[in-house]
Amino acid sequence: MQPARKWSDRIKWMLMNQKVILFLVVVLLISLNILVLDKISYVFHPFIVIFETVFLPFLLTGVAYYLLNPIVDYLELRKIKRVYSIIVLYLVIITILTLVVMKVVPLLSEQITSLIVQFPNYSQDAKLKFEELIGNEYFNELQDTLGIDSSKLVNDFSGRASEVLNNAWSGIGNLVGRITETVLAIITVPFILFYLLKDRKKLSPFVLSFLPTSLRQRSFGVMLEMNQQISSYIRGQIVVSLCIGVLLYIGYLIIGLDYSLVLAVIAACTSIVPYLGPVIAITPALIVAMMTSPFMLLKMVIVWTIVQLIEGKFISPQIMGKTMHVHPITIIFVIIAAGNLFGIIGIILAVPGYAIIKVIATHLFRWFKARTGLYEPPEVEEPKASE
Image 1 (cartoon, rainbow, N blue to C red):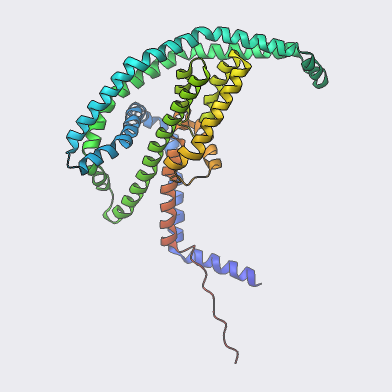
Image 2: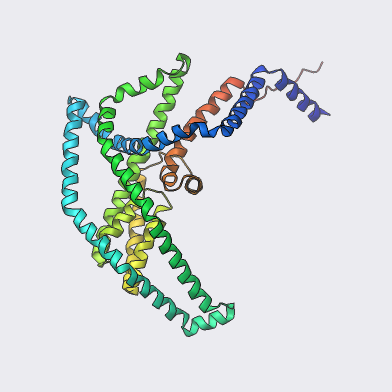
């Protein structure tokens, strides 16, 4: 009877507690609003188009802001006005980009063109090696044991290759459109970035002015924590990716791997995605090394292993540290889910997006605990002294 009585007391307490009832009413109203908004989603189509238009420029501007703002702040501490610091920084960036375009882009373009031209040969070599493997005596014995139909295997492989090739050609039109949007976004970035760097100190008060006075202090703390999480991740991940690209390029040059610059750039770009990026990046390098020679494949694997060990043991711990406080398994599931929902943009923004949601959810939970008192330890009744 005692447990049943405790449960009845808790239910009575919850029914009598107006705060709990108010919370449930708010949840119900939010659910009804979501249902209504889902039925009239067509009303928001113009806003979605506007959001998609401005999303990429603001995303690129945000990344550039978190990379350049520490430099501008440092120069400001040295008694240099922010406007002058930004102008000098722009001139340095323009100089570096000019040198990159003059020295690196031609070599990169040459290697990309050569790789595209040689790709059919690589495909033919891969098919020949696959057929040699199928005709191998040991493979035939294994095939008879497992009941594998080699002709069906070859046909499936060819069909998959043709399907991938057709999908690639059909996606060229979309790719051209995306490239046009990206170029337009890149053109607008310097103008937005200039005013964002110049008026950085005015941004937080401007955002907080839209909130009630009682919520401004707590909201400012949330904004500071979100800013710290995003800035640490963006700066750290980009520096780590650049280090991986440079180390792989040096390693590929040492072993004499073809298309070393292209493969290193691919590895640097894909390494922005934690954990899953290196798996994607090693695939083209494996194909090129495999088509060169078995010994080159062995050397490439050794170089890749050494770079990953250096990155995992020395670079990431020093640069990234423990800023995210997110378990690796959680990151992997977040990336997979975001990729299925939003595609490549979701994969890139999965981790910082999760960090922002985690900060907001943590503060909301703290506020809920403080307001309701549902998580306070139960009061222990002192035993009455026996007469």
